[in-house]
Length: 557
Image (cartoon, rainbow, N blue to C red; front, side, top):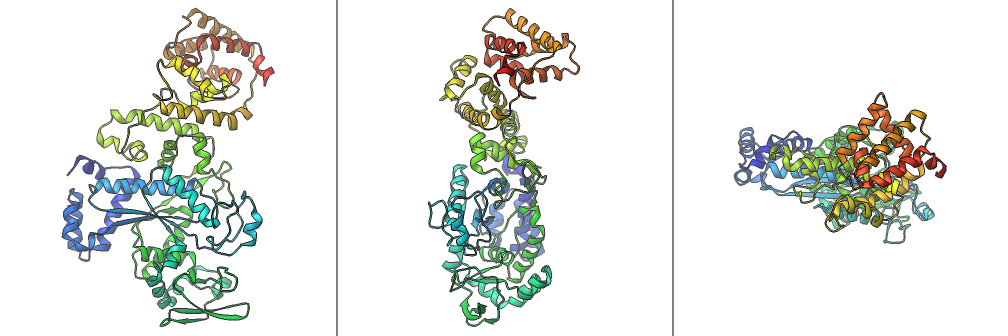
């Protein structure tokens, strides 16, 4: 048994907990006898997964993890988060089984669903209005880039998943229905129509119940995905009969002529693809229960999974693709490191978190703090570190010598509009450093410039210092002048700032630092001031203090 497998089985991070649950589900669902189940589990728990797979024929089949995407709107970070988190569970599972058990991650797009409303913020919205109720892979692309709106959104999702290096298989609902991949399960659903109705109808209101059918036929006349009653069923022929505008039609349930309602569709997909694991948002707890019942009706075993809390926007509202009120993946990657996005997804998935622009700098710096700690930890601690999951075991990158928060303030004070200006300061602070030798730092420089221009600059508000603050700032400038002009020791500079604050009796001492930030930087919070001075330089910092004391920064805003 390898040390990694041992550590993984004892792991307390939530992906290990999920992987243990998945293993228990696989053993229970794939092996019939209780004693055989116990033997198989004992082998796996002692690092002998390969022996368990050989000993129990039903066990030796790839483990399928799935994520779902509804391409009725552009992909948002919640969509990315589901793939990232499922990948983390997959990684934990592979560590616990020594890589002996094959796994597959399917990213499924429900792109045969009908477009029910026009998402906000989409160009050429009239195109979508004209194509309402048609399958998303028939709706024209308002961006003019792909044959359909569904294919456009699918491409956007795949491009970002690829940019993060995820290993996955993409499946399109349209392709699965039309290729015949779902045909056998659809015929089973037709045969067990009444049993599905027994599950679904009690969950519906009286009006909906009166017309509900698990099958949504695609209209031969309009191409719409129709919500109409099933009037007749011909199980032998594999067809249903429905009515549209007074005319009766009979269509096969196979070959892409119908789509299932979303809860039965979810269940049908689990049964047809043999899905073993799928997580879902907290708002879908009841839907998971209902779909699990339908899955059993279809002869399948519902997958293992857990319910994560939802992401909220700045106002505390649920993020919605159709409202467009959340961050897109492009947004985050314009302002923060990709690793910080995956780190944010790892943190506390069962706690509701606001997902808006202000979280990016903190998540970026927290990730690099964890990266700094990683090499100093024993293996058992390393696999609990978010870095192990974010970088999927590859920790070749190193933390930048400057925090993102500090970089933001450097951009602000230096009025830097390009990376070369920033590198002028960075080279002085880090002798020999170049964009090539410090690629992560170079990336941070670009993010900082974008973030400052879009969010910090418009909200900066400088104020005048009061008399006590003026005296302290004048004293600090005088003490800085006494130091050698090339002083770059952040600790020496920080201690000096502390001494001046104490000497001028600021209580609490953070009020002194807040005054520096508000007068000199135009904000209530800022970086470790000694580190800022070390990079910005003594001469420039003294000049900045004088500008703040004289009110020049207030006049210039």
